[in-house]
Image (cartoon, rainbow, N blue to C red; front, top):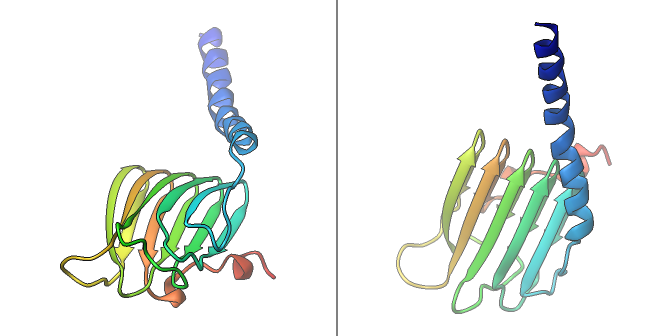
Length: 160
């Protein structure tokens, strides 16, 4: 009986320790690539907070990783590529907020495990460029909005 409790305790400690260690390894392997002018971005926010205010001429998308952190991608200053864009988002114990112009069409395809997605964008119906977001949310979330007041303010949350 005592061995069972010891094994259960060790399993619980491993279960709590392994995800943060894996996130720290992932942070070293995947540094953020891209800046405000980039049409393609690969953003990595792990144990941190990041904001990107894009001014891309033809935003085509990219990827976003949020592990134990938060990220805001503000695309209101960007133009969507004529063929559209695709953003792959993975949030594990973290969150991603995407702010889009009111004229953009958005389609979110999500898989969630104790997490979720929220689409508050108000883009037009019909044809035209489309931003597709493939989201995986595990104990985290992805939110899309057109209103800055709905967006997370990382600097206010940090007390700056």
